[in-house]
Image: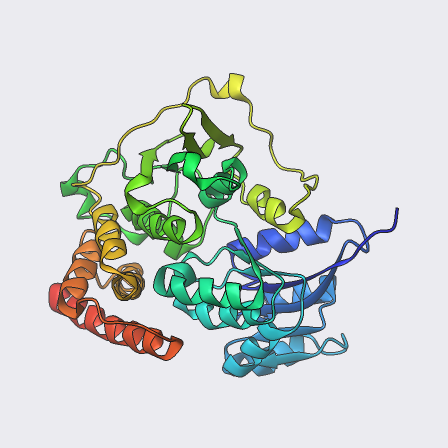
Length: 390
């Protein structure tokens, strides 16, 4: 049987999801995948190392100042390279069967839309694109006939357990949350949390920003919004359960009483591989879940008082796309200031809430409006954070 080569681009190849995707491509049989573009932020050495192994048609950094370092790192390789925003968008628009959208934050929105415009399959690991401009993402996919595949472990789990043929039989979907490192920590102690403590996730290995989001549970709030965009279930029928073992990644409740769950070890290579091989499956060398060794599975309702981010996310989702854009932008700014030791841990949610209250729910009919509102929310959040820190 002839092997069909699938063309692949990775937007955000040097981040945690990007590196896991590259690891799967490295391990794949020769001829299975051909790499079109590798796109990263500013890590020239890491991008060049990936490019020398995978031999993409082009390697791109968004940071123009990193051009000399990338040129030196790729010298003699024969691999074309480029730097800057326009180069990122051009690389994202290059024809590819499958594209990983893993650029962290709102910065990943324009490249994701550029990839969607030329069709194919977009594997969505950048939840912020769906949070801050989900309606534009869905419209772009419909217009080009592109397929959206969720890569977040929770949404990928729901996708696997979901019977999309008849949405009317779905009662609810349940996203699970590890609870982060402060699930049992008092509010008094949380007020003194350091960045080092916040990024020390008890189960998953992730980047700093998403680790802080997990610690505040804003990550689960963003995933709630993403789930409402991706699946045919209204917000009031999307639930969140704290599940410290992180073995059950998502559940779907059906009208006949059946509750289908997807389980697996907490390893991002599993959902990435599912999306990469879909509609088939591929063999992946990840730890297998040993239920006997695990011994028990625990589930708890989230603490809305200690983790107000969940409430803020639901309120923003109900208010409309403008509010979710503000929520995402304000959170990115607040988390960045916390990691820079310029804002307290509990102040992250406070800054987000104050920014939401100040800016209301303006309409965002197009990309320009989204980007303008994103910028306004960032400016407002930064100013409020300065006031709180002074």
